[in-house]
Length: 631
Image 1: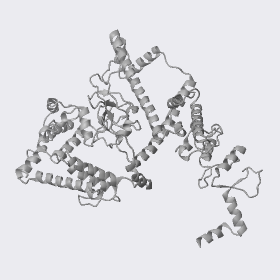
Image 2: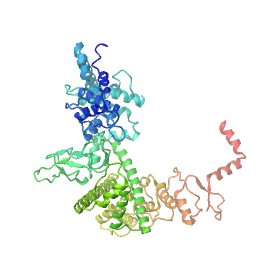
Image 3: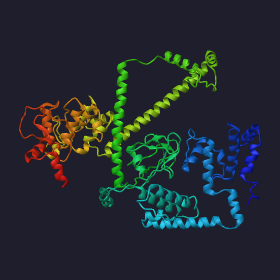
Image 4: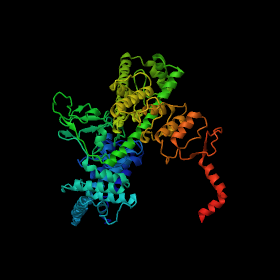
């Protein structure tokens, strides 16, 4: 064995180590590799080139010849880190070559196995085929625990996640479809493996999930005749979304195309949705414009040479997934509402300061000063980018000699074009946010009591569709919508609405507890006033605590089991506060027995007072009562 080792990589490493730096750089230049770094880096780079020649990509190319985009894609498709700003290219290249060794084995190893005549490769293929068939059989029988236990270790739902993941990855390396090209059912077996891992690692289903599953077979859905799962691509790196290595489920296509969610590109980490993604026609493969309103329609791509119509595929979505998405989408819209309010407040503060913008000449002079100081990468006049290490004197000299008007005009045109592209991207992001805002509100039921989630633009559009006035603030428009909904309900039911949207200007009606925001106690005063207006309540009070008290009293009126953390009614609220407190009937407050209306609590005392009186009547102290409890 030792006699057969002179041709191994260590001897090649010794040969490279004996070369001079100039010779190493010449060899790297012949192989189109970078010559930067110390001698150890150059030697390692040449070793990687040799290893890449032995363990080539599936298309036969040496992985060291890949461009940056192809290199990142090759890493991401194998689940490896692909950020060149964190790891060096040589480190990432080593991890890619190691993965290629694991996938196909090395040339020398294959030669050794074939020379030995042991047939180890065939035995591995037979084992992988047998395991894949067993996974397929157990998966079709609905036995996820048996699937992950095929390698010997017993895997159940109670097994730690690390052990579950280890068993899943071990099986995935063996029965991956790329390893079994001759087995027609390899893809289906791998899908059963993935499904078994998801079932065992998913949290326990709540009791409502059983009812949802019972009524799942009665769900109504539209037809998929003439529909396709269209291709979507990242607007930045142009990689396809929804592929097998992107980590999304089939029903995520529904959420994406309806504008309910935005997704992160697995390659460049860019967040995008259906309005910012690049869509391609399933018939002619050309790009086309898309809007969430087109999801349930048959459309054409609009290209001159394509006259066919097509629809968009509708996948089945489990009821539990829909419920989770509703909660997630509502919390996301609540978070975005706070962000919009904070951004509007910053703009208002800037407007109050009245500093104004600098003139064009002032901005140009400031840019030139920053360029001379080395704080700008390019000349603000001609766009020239100086190399690193240039002194301030040289930058000032360039600025003094920069008088080419054609270069100035070309650079100004390039800057203007870049500004237009940024404005177009910002417009697309705003359109995506508006479309998602409306889609989520409709997904939550489109109830007027939830209209406070809408943006000002969407509230105005809702008023226009109903023939209502669109002037005034958002709070005023929401109040008109609530009053309009209350009037329609009186016409259909013959009585005033008792839920959210009823009450008009009275502000004393009962609203649904589900209509209250999940972040009610962290909302600002304008947001709380918008919630009151959307539910048909007239805001009473000028503080957040007053409005929170009013909303909770309207939502939990008559429910004694609800614990409301409130201040005593007489503390800053007057008669109106006590009336609302009496209507709410909080659990921790009971009317005093002496009927004294002149005290500060306005006839209300903590429950502790009545229990103290009961103990006093029985002649027991706190300690005696606790002793009785112990007995």
